[in-house]
Image (cartoon, rainbow, N blue to C red; front, side):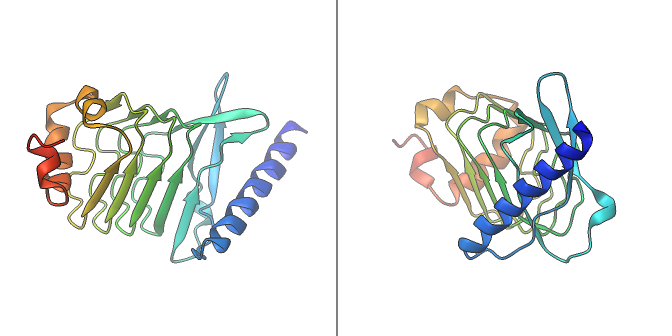
Length: 193
């Protein structure tokens, strides 16, 4: 009974996300996902067997059955070439390592305030990625999260320079992020404001 209820809730959340995305002019279908239940939260990964379209968006739901979707599983969406737009709500506290590695059609990523950790190579080799928005709630960014993102031209960090500098990072990660940000905001990263 709980499993059936969970399926209905997930379908309703996906329908709502699809309606919202259509209202915003982004008329891509929602990526089919599987939810996994941990003790006090859900985590999410792609349902590989259900991919029928050429392009999808993913609006991660904030909660299912009263529990938050708090984590995106490592390699959970790795290699999904049909994913074009990603929206991560603040309920997701952690994006695991290599979660979106090799999503070569992914163009836009928005991560809302509330997310705290992004694991290493989370968005590596997303060659179509051009725009990323990161929240000021981040406390950790792993190694090489944007390595191989050859089209990346805009990274917006919604915090201050001091908050950016306070992030716990891997030294290998800095190269990918700084190079991408430097091309947009040279003075910001070279000791500016």
